[in-house]
Length: 260
Image (cartoon, rainbow, N blue to C red; front, top):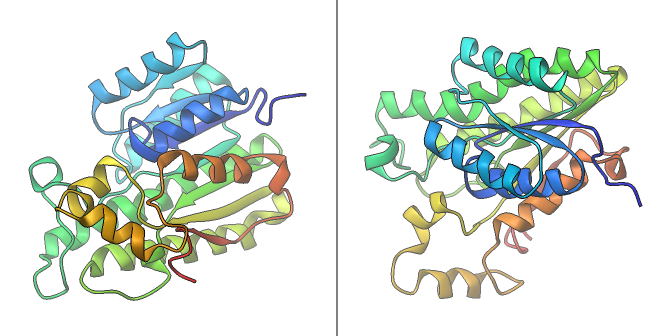
């Protein structure tokens, strides 16, 4: 049986850890060549090394998703080395990051600073815009391709605090729908993943480290557990593959039933 992503090239942002790295490893196992994009060079190098040592084909491309010039450089590197781009997985995001790492915490509208508001929207929303702006034409050049954007259930419903984060993720959902409608006739499909609580470093620093937090969240989740990066990667693989060929413009909650 042929691999689902044989000979395809995937650019994955925020791929040095967590959901992005899990997807990169799964995509490679299904025949893809992947470009690992993230902010920290050492983390990018480690992710690439782990994939290549296992027999995959990965390329590192450090860059800030909120900077148009750096976005173009990442995509140009993918084209120069792998010949083009077939899958654009915009996964990079912030909002739960520890203060010492990113200088930003989720906060309510009164306490959120203007600088933090702009930074969260720059990464979570403008970053998706820039990779679509410069990446979608590359997909069209290959005869079509797939855009996968990471939003959140926070973009689907209201909640306490996290106003900048929720606004950015709601924007990602609508941007995804617009890309799907605009470029579907040119062979580009665009869908949006909306995770719930997922056991990654970003979520751990904000929600899961407190005593009893894991048990409480698991109890409130209908399937009885917290999600994993591999759960998200499996959905991303489906959206990236031809198996989802009639699916576009969708915002898919993957949250263990929380939004239900």
